[in-house]
Length: 85
Image 1 (cartoon, rainbow, N blue to C red):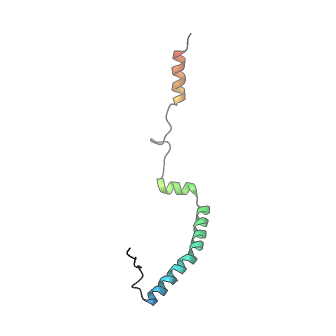
Image 2 (cartoon, rainbow, N blue to C red; image 1 turned 90 degrees about the horizontal axis):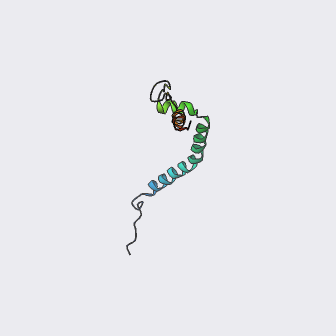
Image 3 (cartoon, rainbow, N blue to C red; image 1 turned 45 degrees about the vertical axis):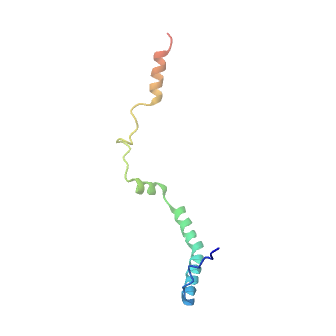
């Protein structure tokens, strides 16, 4: 069975120390970044976010305007025609 070589095998001791320091920095920053993310989510205005994502919407013009009739009204008209007299 062939042994696997480390990807860090060619690194100098200085490079290894810098890599460890970099990893420690991100490990320490993780909880702080998560706290910032949570605070930003709590402060988020959902309506403003939707407006930014979808753009301005005029709900009086198609395709967002309500339909002139309702399916329920059409159903009631059909039932009235089928009703025995």
